[in-house]
Length: 75
Image (cartoon, rainbow, N blue to C red; front, side, top):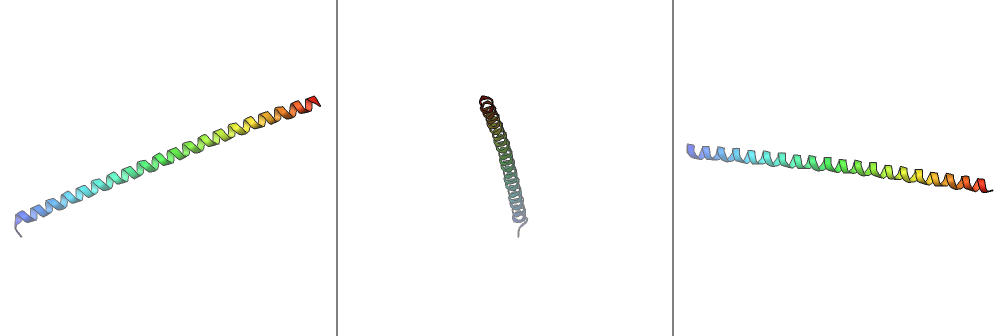
């Protein structure tokens, strides 16, 4: 094998490895970002739902209390 061919093969292998590493890093970063975004969105949605449910329950309780109070006051 001529030294030229050996150099070419080495260059090709280096280029391939670099491309592979770059692709892997990009894929990892994308996966991490997607996972982070999904986790953030889920946490936000859960917090929002919990706050909404708490507010709804508080409102219901308030109305029930007022209704029972007025009922007892009337009778």
